[in-house]
Structures are given as structure tokens and as C-alpha cells.
Image (cartoon, rainbow, N blue to C red; front, side, top):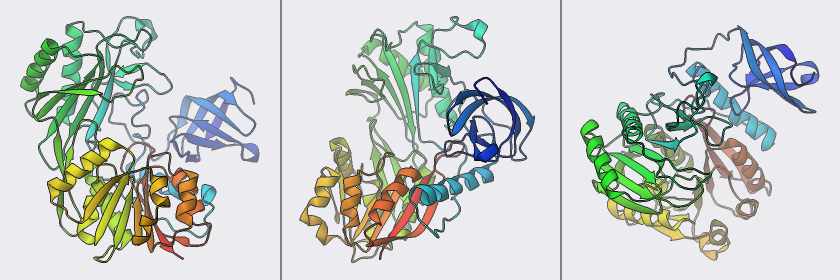
Amino acid sequence: MKKGDELELSISELSSEGMGIAKIEDNFVIFIPQTLPGDRVIAQINKKKSNYAEAKLVELLDESPDRVAPYSMHFGVCGGCKIQNFAYNKQLEFKTNVVKNAFLRIGEFDNIEVNDCLASPEVFYYRNKMEFSFSDDVWLEDPSLKGTEKFALGLHVPKFHSKILNIKYCFLQSEQSNKILNFTRDFFKERGTSIYSTKTHSGYLRFLIIRQSKHTPDLMVNLITENYDEELIKEYANALRYAVPEITTIINAITSKKAQVAFGEQEFVIYGDGVIYEKLTNLNGNEHTYKISANSFFQTNTLQAENLFNIGMQYGDFNGKDNVIDLYCGAGSISLFISDSVKYVKGVELVADAIANANKNKKLNGVANCDFELSDIKDFLKSSSIEQFNKIILDPPRAGLHPEICEILSETRKEKIVYISCNPSTQARDLKIICNKGNYKLGRIQPVDMFPHTYHVENVVEVLAN
């Protein structure tokens, strides 16, 4: 086998990143994007390594019985919903297996039981936040049209650094969000407004971020630009509000940083109060309100976030005697959510803006038994103050925990640790270290589908004192 060869292959499973896998002699693995288990295909090898190969789909000979017609006109080009053509019940089976494989192969845990992945209450229109990029490097599917279009507002095409696909309609966001997206593109394109270039580091338009609450009528538009043009932004805001009257606040965030990161260093509130509010209800029936600013982190699937946090509450078996540490607490979402079930909770976070938002949310909800501390997680865990806490809940970034943090946790003897993660691979890696001293063992494992039609899966693990 060599690069350029065409092979007839049968797809047996999906990789953890949603690519079809075919196995040939001696279990040699070939990864083929845009294929599904049950497909029989012709594929062309485009990369060959000693233990695996990558190929592109040339022809679909026989379709998997689990293939469904994708809703999106952009499917196959946009990188947002790579498995939208896979029957939803099979997506859930796939995500359950992703978690199982991570804990068996990476964590090296034997005899584990993984619950079936929890389905999302909504499989379309579920996202409360969408981030779109402006670019003059437009992806056009017809090569003959290359160079005819110089204005894009949409999503990145996989494996291309600057190419943006003009999204006309996205099924992950609401009808209002789609209206905002298309209106914004048309408004600035008609005026010939400049787009920021990563080559020249000049140009006005950079990002459009839309945030929308599920349990309140709040809807935020955040236009991120290179500088502040008061006349233009007010003209845009007035026209946009007329086109989409449901909008409750409009922000113009400014960033002069060269890196293409959708984060404003300065904000001008053009309309409304510059924030939105969301509500989540816990197992006790108590509702908590969260104030979300333009740069705040909040779980992007609101309805499923409620389920995710409630599973965390269940696995923590929290009661009125518990003193709990919430590590990587962000804006205090989990700390406040569990506060009415425990004696005391302390949220710890390294990001100052997040701690400021957490304290605002604490005040907003009138919670008295919760405090937040700005600290490096490692430094906090090394302090003697952790001895007063009997349980830990943590939800770290995708990269997981630093090995030294895992080592520190492995030497503690807490009644329970609840580990929530958006990356089962790093979670399994971390828990292998946390459990290696024999102080802890795994309990219940619950995958949660926060992101239907993508290969991503959230996972909650109960870690018990041994």
C-alpha cells in the first residue's frame, strides 16, 4: 500500500474524533473522514505511516443502515457537525464507547461500567452561544469561482487556517441567531467595510458572537472589531434592532491583538445593559440565576447543563454537613448550583474575571454559604486549608489536570471526588494517577451528550474513597 492507492474498504467503527475506521491485514487501521460504521467505500490513501494510514472518500458503494439525511446545507464542508448524518441513537452509542475506550485503554481501568450516554433534550437549536469569524479568504466549493468573493462571515473550514465558509443557516442556533448572522454579513458587505487581515494586521471586522438564554428572553449580540467607529456601530445597531427586535443587548468589543481570539479587551455597550441572564434549576427544585457577560464562560447547551450539574449533585451525595471545594469554578455555576445542598462550598479559579463574575452571581442569588478564591489550583491544594473540606468537585479545561495536581489529589483522603470533563481521554489519564495510590476507586460513570452531531462528549465520574 502506498500514497495514491485506491482501496475498497468496509467501515467498522468511528474514531474518537468521528472518522470512520477500516481495518485490513494484521489489524492495520485506515482512517477515512465522512464515513460511518456499515459503509462500504472506495478510498484513496493520502498519508501512510508504519501503523496506520489516512484516506479520503472517493465513492460510497454501500450506505450504512444508520446513515440519515443531514439537515444542514453546509454538511461535509463546515466542521461544526461532523456526524450529523449518523442516526442520533447511534451517536449516543458511539459516545458511550468513546468513554469506555478512554477508561480501558488510557486509564487502564478494569471491570468498569459506563452508563449509556444521556441524550440531549434538544438535538437541534441547542446552542446558547455561536462564534462566527469575518474573513476575506472565502471558501468556495466551485473552484472556478475562486477570487470572485472576498467577504465571508461564518465558520472555519477544517484544516484551513483562514478560510471561512459563509454560513447561510445553522441548525445549532436559533432562528433569531440565523437572522442576526445573515443581516450582519449583508449590512457590512453592502458598505464595503474592511475585514481584519492576519497578514497586514489591519482592517475593522473580526468576530460576531451571539449569546441567547433558554429560560429568559435575553439575546446578546457582540461584534468584535479592531477599533471603535461610533457612527458605523450605531447605524448597525439601529438597523439590527429593527430587523431582529428580540435582541436585548448589543456590544461592540475592541481587540487590537494580532492573535485571532474572539475576546475583547475593551467593551462599548451600544444597547441594553451589556449582559444576559440565564436560570438553572437543581434537583431540590431551587432556581439559580446567572449573569453572563460578553466574555463569561457558560455551558453552551443550557438544558443539558442542568442535567449535567444535577448528575454531579447526585454523584456527590451532598448533604448539609459537607464542606466542598469546587476547583476550576469559573463564574461559580456549579458552586452556586450545589450550595443549597451543602454546609459550605468554596470555588477556586485562576482567572480574575471569572472570580469577579462568580461573586456577582453569588450576590445575585443571595447565597451566604459560598465563597470564591482567586488562586492557582496547585497552590491552593498544597495549602493546609483543604483539610477542612471533605468532598471535591472539579470541571477543568479540555487539557485536563497538571500531573502534579493529580499527584496531590491522589494523596488526599476525601470522602468523594466528582470529576466532570469535556475530554474523556485526559479525564481517564488524570484518574489513573489519582487512583494509583489506592486511596480512591472509580464509582459511577455517566457520559452526557452536550454537543449533538459532533464527536464531543462530556463525562461525569464519581470517585470514591477506598
